[in-house]
Every structure is written in structure tokens, then in C-alpha cells.
Length: 531
Image (cartoon, rainbow, N blue to C red; front, top):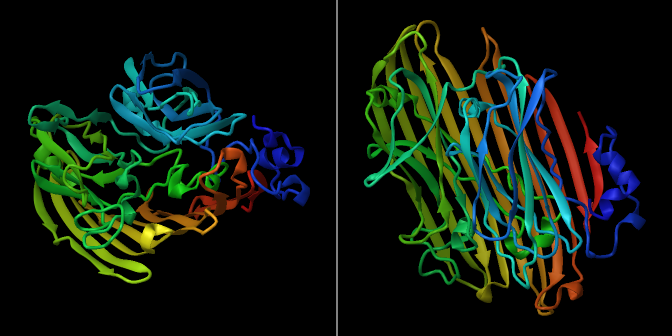
């Protein structure tokens, strides 16, 4: 543990004082030192059932370069082969000096975790990630190869070796929510990637773990501008990005990528030493309902599947987009037939207007709509599925010559409605996602760099439950930070200061969770649960 993690008051708050706590002023140093509190997040831990459990180690690895860890997975003994829940836990530690790094974990080729790492203190930090991976149960029922990589560089300057242990805990029992029957990956061919589904597939979802990274302009894609704007990161049509999935060349799904900020982001690691940005340690996939295409996919033949990111300049790298396909099957039929009946998309609207001046400005207003519909003749009758999705992005990017002041105020929305019709009334699920990023970085004449940033992750979901019950939930995960340091000087002369906070609120038909964290100069000053 880090030096400050041992402070009694803070430890008692972290490990469960429901009323919360605030550190005394004496506990907060005037500036960052050589150590700080271990990274924490306000997101809730994974709920675990009270049943028999079994644990399996997936990886024990130290990452010093870009060599993947390779191992073998064997299903657990003593917990059966159907589980009420499967929980992944990553325990990591690193010390010295190191950049933030991006990593993945594959089991049988299925991506079950995409993550980034915190930047360490000289004295060392530890961190933990939990994830509910019950939906990959099909993958875990047989022995599989394991591959994990957190690409890293260790040399005389960047000394941090990333040490991780990853395990799965299996809880016996039948899952409360039905896990998919099959979890598939795409097959590479000379002509691209293909997918072959079981011939009785009646529901098909795709997951795409899309991340812009690599330290280049696509890590900060939301700041790119088109000519003739005078900015260091260019893109032909500005900052609008959209992740598309096509089946046999036909548009099947669209999604807005989340504006991930890693722990060195916005030129200021002091923002993220204790509190990472939302989703930084557990990168969530974009999800596409491909059920309208099931009638086409159920013919037993391979179909080409392409994933692309709209807006990336030709030849520019920086995006990774691995795909998992989740399939639910009709257990009473060996073959299900059907057809795609509608696939309508608007043209992508993308206006990006440049206004030069003492403060240069680019206003962007963009969006896209897609509606797909199809039917299947199943063992329980004809079922029609219609998926309607609408994306929108507005942003204002301002910067001065030399980019000594650089700011963005942006909002992304991703709204989806899935309507399923058959015998009885239609069942409709609605998901409204909103992402916000408002931040400014300034560098003064004294080489003092300051970043002020707020990042929001919001969701409102309404879906049918059992019987006539409607299940709904609302999420608001908001991070705010303000940090400054002196650039172009040795580390011990930066005189860095910074405050940060995160509030994670989720409430709905199943209850409430409300957690607040705050920090100052690396000290955890508040840890309070309000529900």
C-alpha cells in the first residue's frame, strides 16, 4: 500500500464508514510528494451471491515490453458448469516512473477485459479492478488458451514494471439473467473477417471494445480539426467519430465511442493519480443488437463482418476494435429462418466550422440515424425485432496560437430503442446514453501548466421485466479535477497541486447507490456513501 493509504481516518472511510469522512487540513500536504493514495474509483463493487464459490487464476504476469503473457485456463471444479455469477478481479502494482498503458485479456480469443493502468509514484502503488463477466460463461465451460498484454517499455528512464494477478471467481447456481448460449469471435480470412452463427440463433448481440489510443492524435480524437484550422491534430472532417459494424457490406449498427481519458491524459497526470476518469480501468464495449440480421446469419454460411471508425483519416492508426458476438439459441428448433425487412440510414450530418481569431474556434454539430428490422420464425411463433439508433455530437473547441490555451466543451448522445413483437403486446427497451467532456489546459509565461476538467458518463435505461414489470435505472458518473505543475523541470521541482472528485450515482427500480470520493495533493479527503 502507499504511504497515505495507511492514515487511520482515511482507511476507516475506505473500508466502510457509511457516514463518510473528511481528512483534517494537516493530513493534506501543500503539494504532491513522492507518494500518494492508491488509485480508487467510486463505482460499486460487483454484487456477489451467497453460494458455493470456486476461484481460478487466469494470469500472473509482469509486463516489461510488448510480449504477451500466454497461459491456459481450466474450468473450476466443485461449482458445476452453470453459474449464478462469474467475477473477474485484477490486482496490479507498479512503482517508479511509467506512462499509462493499455491492455487486454483474452480467453479462447474472447476479449473479457480491456483496461488501462495508473501512473505510479516512485514508492509504488497498488490498484484493483472488478468486472462481472457472467455473460462469457459459455467461454469458461471448456479449457481455453489465455492471452494478456499490457504493452510496456522499461528502460533507464521509465522504470515501472507492471505486475498483475488476474482471477475468476465462480458462484454456483443458475444466473438471474440468462447468459448467452454461445460466445463467438470473428474468423480472419484473406478477404476480411467472417462470422458463422448457429442455425437456430434467435438473438444476436455484438460487442466492440473500441478504443482510440497509442499516444497520437486518435487518443484525443475529440480535439482534431479539419483544414484550414491551425491546430496540431488534423482530421479530414473534424472530431466526429462513429463506430460502425457492417454485415456483408450492409450497415448493421452504429455507436458513439466513449471519450476515454487515460491516466496521463490532457497533459496532466496529477489529475488522475488517485481518481482515474470513468471507465479508465474497465473499458466497456459498445453493444449492437444484430437480431434483425439473424434470418440472414442463420443460413449456416460465413458472413463478412467489418468494423470501422468513421472520421479517422486514411492511413492513420490508433484505434483498436476487437469483436465478441453473443448468441441466444432456440432450444426447440435446430434451424430458425427469417429475413431482414428494413435497413434505413440517414446520411451522416457533420458540420465543423472554423472561426480564426485571437482565440481560434471550431464548432461541430454532427449525427446519424439507423433503423433496422427483421423477423424470425421461431418455435414460439414469428418474432419481429426493430432497432432504431440515433447518434449526436456537439462540441466547441477553442485554442490560442501556440496552443498555450486549449479547451473543449463537448456532448455526445447515443439513443437506442429495441422493439420486439410477436404474440401479445410489443416489448420495448430504451437506452439513452450521454457523455460530456468540458476541459481547458493552459500554460502560463512561468511554464505553469494547469488543467481543469469535468467528464460525465450518464445513462437512462428502461426495459421490460418479468410479467408486466418495467425495469429502469439511471446512472450519473461525474469526475471533476483541477491540477497544476511547472513544466520543463525535474520531477522534484514541479511543485504540483491538484484536487479531484468523483460522484457515482445509480438508482432505479432495483434500488440506489451513491458514492462520493474527493482528493487533494494525493490524499483521499472524502469517501462517503449516501444511499
